[in-house]
Image 1 (tube, rainbow, N blue to C red):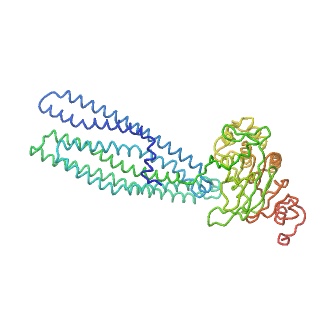
Image 2 (cartoon, rainbow, N blue to C red):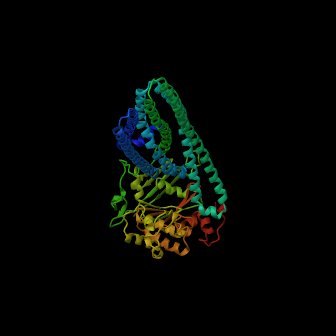
Image 3 (spheres, rainbow, N blue to C red):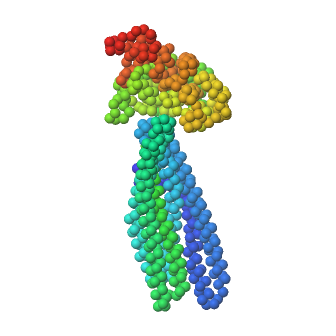
Length: 603
């Protein structure tokens, strides 16, 4: 992985043309500034001889005005380049974050990732122009100033160079500490963002639990840690700034004393001393600029290194084509303008799913969730997955979506291993409704068309009718364009579930995965949605995880899971007579009124 300075230069490289123009304009402005002390010396010499000084005064005025204008233009170009650098970095980070593999995101704090897109990239904006300007303009103008000072008086130049050398040694010692302190500060800010995101993500739970003070204390600890690291970074920056400021003042006093003695001895004239001091005054901010440039380069490098860490995380490649991959959906569907599936006349062909001896654990060292899970589901119909919590039912869906890959065994869609499918094509064939049915901030239309941007209003209305939400748009003040609030807070739990199902159906999937899709519906809505799912299952394959068995009693097949294994497969009626666990679940939920012996006695 590139070092931090190289990572920063990588971000600046695309803007090298505009930055070069900005640097050149700033350089021209600075060159005109270099000529000003000579013009001032000429004015003093003319006045000392009693000659008119109109010409030199006019030249001096032109130099001041032109130098200021050119320097301002250069500064604008550098700042504009910095904004482009930040925008490009943020776009790359956003693309990278959304392409990350699910396991990577689940083991990383979201707040820390967000801080890298926001605060770390902002440091690039702050450091880029200063670092570039100091590296080029500051260095060249400092060198030119030193040359001009040498032409005026070599002795005074020697005194000045001694002071500059001292500043350089001091800055070289301090700069690495500034970079490390800045990195620690950004990491602390990231941890604070993660803690805040955690609290806001469970805001109602915190309120209901009366845990505001408890969470506030945790956030205060994170904020205090960020403050301490920020103070440490500020202290090293202050040391750097103080060294440059104090040394420049000492330099002025030493030059003034030595120069005064040389004027008294007649070695140089007063006008030469004045011109040298003017160059010294011009040199002081250049030294400060160089010091600040080094500081900003260290800050920018630390930020670029954190950005580079995100860019090195594992990502999916939805567009990658496997030479063995087929396109089974091409027989029954064609692609939309946005790459999503659009139903052909006959509709998409239902997908068949099979697991063959699948073993899986979420991370090395953790217990396995699946132990040689095997089952086969033909295309079409409704298949339900039931069993106690923690038996691996939701994991089945995560493996089908390829959020994870099995540690052993195969997951097949239409007889092909999922790893032989391009991810974009695989997921275009699948509609997935998660257990917590996320609804995004934005309008109802934006939520429904997520992944189906070409859907027409008629298609939206049809999908809403299917999930019994057609009356919702009539009640909303702006219909489909009504804001639903953060995470759908302006919708009920049942409405959020049905919005998620309608969103999945709009994509025209060949396989629909429903993870507890009716858990927040009342009895009437559940019955209506059950009829809808039964109708959908007549045209595509539907897999449903259910704890409420009332939603799946009419399923074509039911897969009973226990302890990460498939225990039994059959219809509701078959399983009541053959599987003790299923019978116990059914009895608990009053689906079987017959007296049932205990599971222990049956097994």
